[in-house]
Length: 101
Image 1: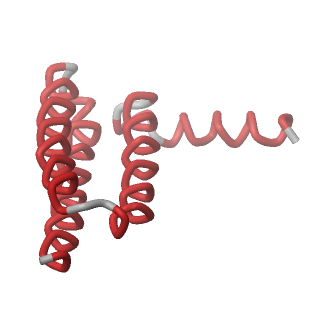
Image 2: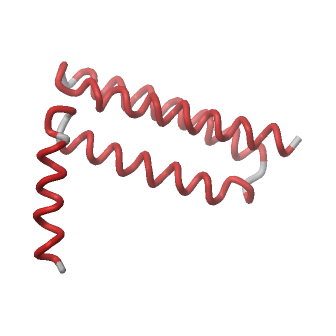
């Protein structure tokens, strides 16, 4: 089983190399995992905690994007990914807050 996974991961790393390589891959996995977790738990969270998540997501998106931009032009996709993630989290949290009112 491990023998088939390793070549697939190497192919994935090669595919994302023009977009920032391992940094882009790591950010994409974290963004997808955190967004799925938010979708799963959003109905159980109160509005104050959702507002806090919204603020933290904005801060993480700006800092992650800034850090990736400082690494050079090759990391443009890695800089754009946290911004898109931050917008998606913000919209999801805002809609859930509106439903709770």
